[in-house]
Length: 185
Image 1: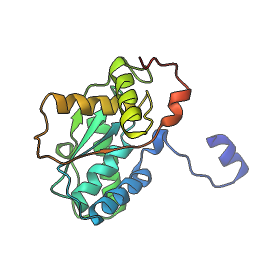
Image 2: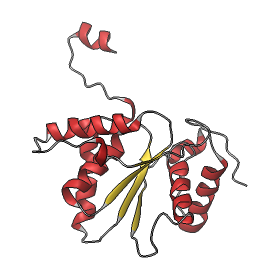
Image 3: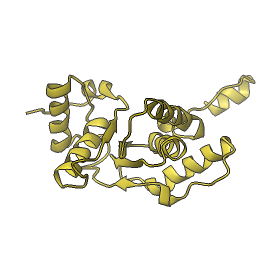
C-alpha cells in the first residue's frame, strides 16, 4: 500500500493493527470522559488488551478524567504490552500536549491470555456463554470472551473487594463468533 500511495501521489492514512496508535487512543480517552460525565464512580475499568490501543486510551483517559479509577488490561496475547501500551500512552500525551509523560507504572496488566492469539479457550467459551445467557451480549473468542473470562477469574479469586465498582469495557468483536469454530458446551 505504501508504494501504491506514493506512486500515485495520493494522500492516505495507514491504520496500524487494531488502530493502536495515538490517534486511535483518543477515542477511548473520550470514552472515559463520557463515563466520568455520568457521575458514576468506578474503582476499576477493565478492558481487553489485544494490541495496546484500547488500554492506552482507557488508562490515559482515566488519568485525566477519573484519577481515582484503576485501569486493567486483560491480555489476550503475549506481546510485551507494558512497553507497547506505555509507548502509545506517551505518543497520545504528546499529541495532546499534556504536561506529564505516562510511564509503565501507569499500565496495569493481567497476563492470562490462554492458549494463544485467536485460539479459543474453554474459559473464554464459558464466559461467552455466561454473558449471552445472562445479559444477551455476545462476546467473541479472540478478545472480549477471553478478557471477560479473566475478569470473572479475578473476581472469583477475590482480587476485588465486594464494595468495588468494576466496569468491564466491552470493545466489540462479536464478528469473531462466526469466524472461529468454538464449542460452547
